[in-house]
Image 1 (cartoon, one colour):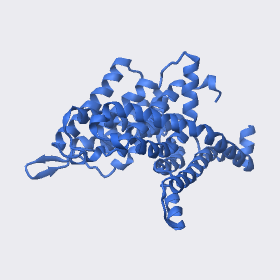
Image 2 (cartoon, rainbow, N blue to C red; image 1 turned 180 degrees about the vertical axis):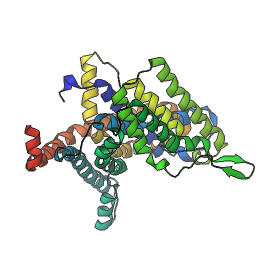
Image 3 (cartoon, rainbow, N blue to C red; image 1 turned 30 degrees about the horizontal axis):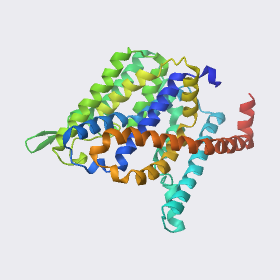
Image 4 (cartoon, helix red, strand yellow; image 1 turned 45 degrees about the vertical axis):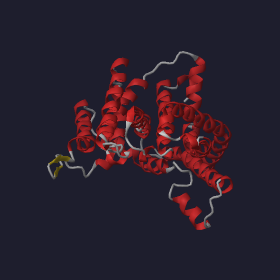
Length: 356
């Protein structure tokens, strides 16, 4: 796709999701989860943490939007090559970095195990998710497009909401000493499918809500969930409060309104368009390389990880991690792109489809 024909709103979503990943890792790296949930700073931190937690679901919705028409073919499978090349190269770089600069000493077998367990780059677990999702995309599309009727798609999404998201809202109700589960929650782990189908729905029906409604939706869902975590923790750690994962009802709501807010964004300024496009193309590299930047910034700001510093540290640290990761990606991205193109040229079936 030529840059002038890109749907810039999708690049904006990808950039927001990328920055949110850096944001949610801010809380992961500074001991936030073990701090007492007391004071306005921690309440603010809870709200921001839940808002940024929408990062991975945003990427999965993007996958559904962009691959919602993909069909099973030899050509389709070449799309995984750049992802695998980036993951392999950056994982090796991250392991070398930890060995040389942080003195991590372990056996060769442990280094190999880390690589294949998607721990070479600290945050590469997402690659494990994406590989499986990529392989399933054509089959999920067949399921989604089984019927062309809008009613079919509406019922499908309602079913995913009831199966995946509602259990977190209606289950674990405590009455005295009893815990009541209203809905079966066996399939909440299907959250990648729920977000993928959400992306397919956005692609097919191009839903629109006004900006004010979307912003209010994000703020209300984030604030309510933050308050739930803060109050239920009762002054103890984050883990003592009402938590949840990507199948959490409020996380689904935050993600829905965020995607709605940005995916149809029009960016007229050419320099800003170039920025979003440039960062979007390197988003995977920035994401994986941010583990190195995080380790560096953790050492620099080690003495400022107390909650009293969150109000300024969050912005400063996230921006620095982003800039360092972006700078590293400028070196790594051209190399992985060249390797990926060479691999695809070596496969006759892919080379033929490229010429077509």
